[in-house]
Image (cartoon, rainbow, N blue to C red; front, side, top):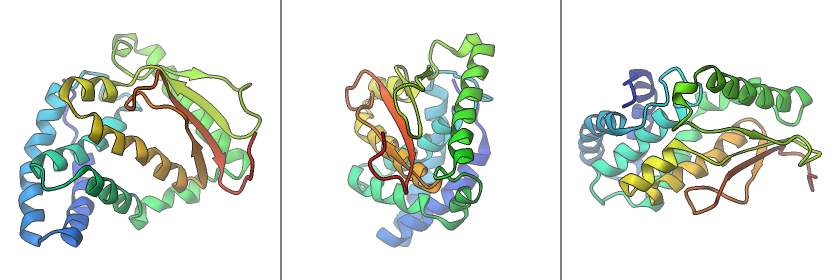
Length: 214
């Protein structure tokens, strides 16, 4: 069971509600959001405990907001529509502030991505009780000349989605990685995801101004 932390719902729910109102009737949006919050808590109650302080846990908390909304709609929001809603949320202006701090076209931007992932991996090493279900970390700086590469062979969201029959929805959340990369002036090059049946989730971040990266 994952500990409930309210800040993720408080931050994202109003933006999701706004997007729903653009696509559906206001009454429907309000009804869905009202139903979604207890579903959000229930998802966390059924989730594997990877540690609320895990720096990667934000992926669970934010993904579950979207999944809860999708479940609350009871089929009236398609996976395709959820993908569009997630794009609109990621385009919310305050979220774009990330680009002021991380620019993958600069060496320090790539270093920032690298250092963040190394710190995340270090946290997990220091908290072995969460290693069974959390992401693992596999780094290979020799694989590419440009940007930064790493991959996972284990993802708690993938494990959970397979158990809960939510793989189609999870792939929407996987696509959010591309949107997140854009906020950092980066392109994400990816060949595999666990959610789509691959053996790894690979991440190769390159500055979005670099053509033909190596």
